Image: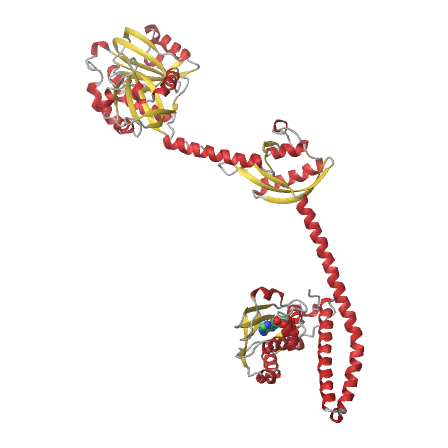
Length: 634
Ligand code: ADP
């Protein structure tokens, strides 16, 4: 997780701020960069005051060694002080001494510090010239204020000896809620909660001893008593021979809050990972564990410290480890996640595992590791296997049922043919029969016809399913087929007072089996007539790119939504008592769907209960696979 540090004061930031102060100092400030472990010092910074007094332009001196720029520095004794301060980190005062080289001569009073950045800072003044600072910093206060007030951070200067504030910028006044005059009457001890003072002072001490650069999250007390948190950088400075402390304050309350929220969510996240029963781990590119949750320990029966840093080859038999490595490499190479299931054998333990692997990328988008979540799916696999077996059994039962029906139908066909033949003979004597006899004969004929239809349908769907069904393709005029079907059913429909309205558009000839398309049309229109009591039946047909689409739209009883999916099942009738009344078999739509799909088309139903139904089917215009079309629909 990313730490929010945008509001943090960096070393560089406080250094820049501090240097802006040195620019306006009435003291001479020079900063040196030690080289070769303190053998010499390169001049990095030279403030304007120093330029003036030492009669040298900073462009001519920056980047030069101190021994070159000030040839007498060793003789003068200051060089030794530099080396000592560099080594010990402790500031030193090099009291007033006469300095002279071929360019300048004068008395120098030097204070030497080591900065947190490791550089050496020399602050010196010329006591003979010290007409500034008679009243301390007052005269330059305006200049200070200009720098102070251009900063976004709170800046304050305190006397190092009594910790009293000397001055501060507008930001610090706003942060603390004091006016500048009020602030000048306070000391460091007044702007921190009492109970935190020991900690605050120890942090400042650490800073002065260069143990830390910035004191983080120091509690700071406002005038109204409320507390905020600030990162504080303090650096010592000598002004007119007096030691001061420059403090730069940055309010990090918000940052702290964000950090705490992040920490909290990190803890929550950790709790989830730690308590997960799934194994969660991260592998580096060399297949070594770099992170894992307790579930991984449980699986391997080893404590975490024995797993971290080890290769997965150590924990799995070679063939399984290799399988995993292959999957990991796949993720690393493709940069994509991967889900897989595998059978695992570890010792005597045999189980099924699922694994989800995902790449972990660095900021540049390079893959640096793979995160995996694995889960024992043995139970699920067991259910799946059982389900599969059950499904197969059901299929067997279904096949046996179809076979049984098939055999029965064949067996029934012979006596039925005989009955039909005898009924034909009996029909010749119909007129000589009594009324009761005639009614019975009619009933026998009607039922005989229904039985034959049922048996024909069973045999037809069985043949299609068994793949023993041949289609005879030719160029079919679909408009004509629709018209003929409508005419055939006209008498039946008009008996019920229902009109069949043909609204088909002119269509191209299609590759199809004409007889079978007629059967499809008859089935659909007949159903519509059967299940419509009033209104009309509209026939529509249009071309859809490479297909024709035919719709039979009725204003009949409609079909409940949840029943639509069952319509094409064998022997299914939405309402079986109605089926008996209308004399259906529940096989019509099964066969219709099979015939449509055999010819490369599709059927769909839209219906609203009580309002009507629309059965639409498509058929390809050009059927290139017609030669090898030979049943086989399930
Ligand atoms: P059936 O021989 O019973 O008509 P089908 O397979 O042709 O068998 O139809 C199955 C069932 O679908 C019918 O019994 C009926 O419940 C329903 N059905 C079919 N077409 C329509 C329609 N146009 N309107 C309402 N219900 C229909």
